[in-house]
Amino acid sequence: MNFQEAIQTCFKKYADFNGRASRSEYWWWALFNVIIGIISGMILGETFGAIASLALLLPSLAVGARRLHDIGKSAWFLLLALIPLIGGLVLLYWFVQPSGEANEFGEEATSIA
Image (cartoon, rainbow, N blue to C red):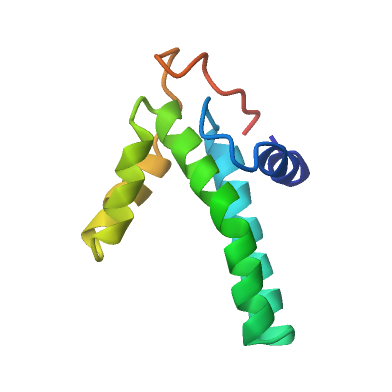
């Protein structure tokens, strides 16, 4: 999955917390969030940056949930992000794991990368 396909997929599944997301889909979306954050925050101002972050929150949670489903974990583990430092590190470790085989969340997410 390339950058453009990942962004299109995430916007198509804006609030879809079901199914699975490949590593490439998740990380291309993360890169898109960083780029939008830099552009909107530094160039367009803090107010616009906050609006952009709020607009991307729901699809970011959805792709994170689908990524956890891809490795066989429940989306509720996203709540680990609320634990300072440790929660984020645990989630980072899980997000870089390779896709698992078919599980209760569906078939393996397709990815070229």
